[in-house]
Image (cartoon, one colour):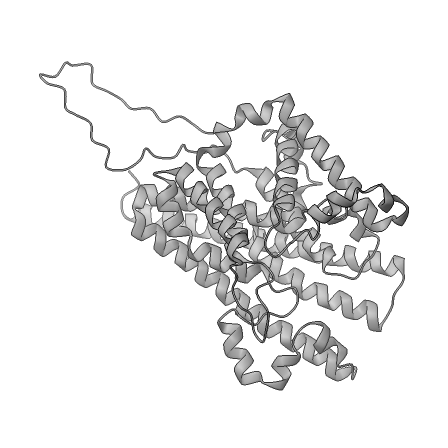
Length: 412
């Protein structure tokens, strides 16, 4: 990201003796001159893709990246979440100290938790109403709320503990856990960034070796294992706090470009064998035995490598000063990325509404396309509304502060 170097003004008058400089804390992070729109763009795209993937298969489903490789929109969302969280709260930790920054992070965790509980209640009401009104109990079973209808008292407590999660509501609990442990991660990363990343890799390896997981209610484990997915989150934080700059030469290398493109093409061929049976005999049996299953809950290394290859090529061909980022055509998806929490919750609600509409009212390829497009338009409209409200309140706060300053005799 672009930065403005900080300069210090030293006196020209010689001093009798030089004083030793003692740094009580690491040097401050560089200031940024403008918002990194690439992050907003790809986070918004991830939210759109997550919404489309949660709908029944349709025309737009074939435009999502999960059909052309090993990773999907979840990797994009978690990586960018780690990147932005580390960049924002890392600066706060250096400027205000660990306690203040940790308090800000935990406040954000509480906001995400409240949003998750609110979404959970609305989601249950939506599914229960549809299942009862249309006398179709399959909705309750398919969306994973059958246990709630049997034992609502116990299930509510388990939901508050993040152990009970209906279908499509697994990302926010993962994000809550990752953000909850961000303060100690940031504290270590600001001092020994490579050590923090190495410990994250070690935990990822231990997860696979010792089968670490968090239990879910009423049975099973979390769909997204935090012990494994923390690697992507921490890697994003590592990149935000200087790792990306240190990898500039590697990312600009033609060798990296060739290896990334070759891996993406190989992954694309493998995914083609899932949909085109005639290509399956071309897959070597030994490779299949080694590769499958490509585990998503534990963030399979093939998925992680696929995301890295996508990121390397994206950084290579999409510079941060690309004029298209200011285009009005990309404005809707960028706005969605700037209000990710609200748009994610809205997308979950719209995905089930679209699924119900397609199952009970109308179907067909064209209707599938219209439902998907309508959901994206509603998400973009909501993002525009949130952005407009934010601008209005910011202007009101500035005007109020200006009036207070005038009454006090002006600003310094």
